[in-house]
Length: 342
Image (cartoon, rainbow, N blue to C red; front, top):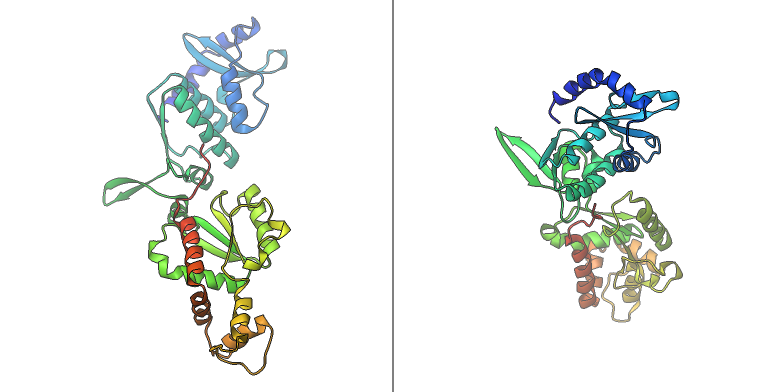
């Protein structure tokens, strides 16, 4: 906003206060329904229900009418409320372009997100363009979508550049910690290691930043996935998948759940046990015959086979299925992060 305009407006409000009182006494004001709805939706509050609009010397002013003709002028509202009212005035005037520095500075997180969602509609209805700066994580995350309106402005040796960037890129640059575009939720450490192993040869071609997280047990994995669908604490829907052992196919807890992938084996340990017990097996032998998980641990802990050697060995037993599975996971990782439109 032009830095001097707000302070000039304060003086105008003081000058017209006497005229404002006269108009209130004879009820010479109107109800600005669109602005009231706008404020309601930004703040999720009904406290603007008695907002009134008055025109003095061809200028519009706003106030909240209280009992016995007491009133609260717009300049006595909070800085965020005052800002939104004046932004509304500018939009209504159909100015072609409005520039706002630090749009989030006087708004809480919820109001920031609500405001920007509503501005998208106002820009269409009033044919206005709005360019704003922000350091708000909430706003950046909301704007990070396939047709992103999110840009990174940088000053490099006096040269100003604007580049389209993802939310997690900006979060990493601006706040010094790493975020992820995609999440793969899986059952245990072995599955996490297996996924890391099959994806590592493709690391240079994977376009998104991703994180593999093992949870423990298929039902727990899916439960966490469902919670994320509601709260989106990992990422928005479509940016999180589950990878489970093949023996989980058909389980009741998976009904109606999407984005579930299964490795080509009943499990790494079960497939290893099957291959180990074959008469012509060429796998290294351990001291005693154990159950499936014990065979895996026995081979890796005695250094007879590393986890990666076991994964390669098993992959060779069904290479086509492994290739299809890997292609599915790569397809997920290489799609641009999907966030809902404004």
